[in-house]
Length: 553
Image 1 (cartoon, rainbow, N blue to C red):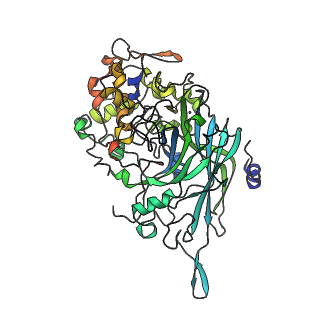
Image 2 (cartoon, rainbow, N blue to C red):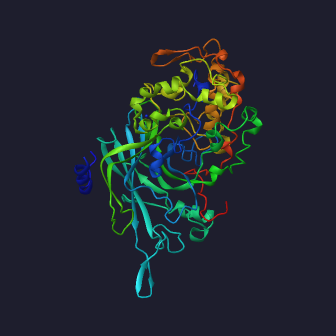
Image 3 (cartoon, one colour):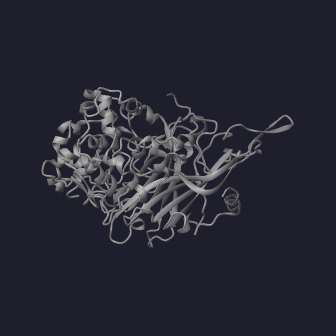
């Protein structure tokens, strides 16, 4: 059981989720991108705004056949605090010590967490002061000189964190501390990339950040498989999307979006404006045998952030750091992310805050947004001034609901699947080296080999939506699906079984080529930014060195 400390107890009183379905992988969660500032409330609390969730078999140091290196491990990355301006000093972007950040794993398909990794943060003010005449005057910055070491004496603010693993319900299950190899329960976080004078050029900062990759021991995992890695720190924004254009009613002509030659016209080889921003990553690498249960290799994952139910603001705060509020009461979930941009572009505006506060086990309440989505009609209005111009007519959209709620039979559907929105990963599928990864995930690989009949020729079946890797271009994959690409593949004979949804017999439709206004052209749409051109690391934590706060932009 989780136990509140004495102060938290006082505050509580005081305030009272390959065969037949390979082509379905075009869907990728019925979303267009990742989750940045997606709901009304979360825009007021950026420190707990979850932006991206990645879950994939680690590919650091692996051989061409997917073995060796870190191939037996799964990397989980939860990003928070979107679109950070690198020069955002003097405080930069610490995580919230009054929040609870969590990564959840469902390993039996019931849409309820079976494992949860909980992260809590502490910000320690070191009180660096300078003698000014007869006075000792505290400095206004978080650093007093060059920084290069863990717990560097020139840091005026140190950020540390703890990690707990909870088995069962996230609030009522058994909680144990994740530790360093020496048993220490406190982990250090690197200071954000303030700039070159403080932290050196990018290579120097990355070397400093790597000192904060901690080897860990996870209690309760199988013997010999209870070790892993953890890193929390600032990274370059790795998600690529033509964000401003998309939200400005898709401010680009259809001829541009349907021409494959333009797939990176706005991305500029990984130098799109979004790649000039940073994000804060919580990354943990865990042996796959520690995450699965029984013989089913499929797991579901999602991230959340929670805040205390109430807070008191002090009109006369004492000296210190973040001393203006006193938070207390029960934890209240305010952010949730599994598949990318579900809340941003699928869930309707009235229910965005509700979705962020919900749990996967209750997702049938949002079913209408998937089976009768508004996005295709909006795209029709934006591109042709007609809501029916590009919107598939097979309502309810059983093609989208199949992947969105259950996973794909033979790919990433668990043996027993409760309909729910989580990112699903088949841990039995071997990882693929970065250079050989298909930017369109499994869908791109199936298209590359000429269809499901040629699966024996496939090289990369480890991509989105079978988990999600940094290189997977979820935007382009999802655009194809939203505009009916799945129904074109399904054909008139229901070859892929998309006219119904497994486990939901009341949902049926005529998912076939004649229901798709764009026809085969639906496979060509893109947003003009190629995810594959964004720079990444070939090792944990995989997301790239952050942008320097003093670099020229």
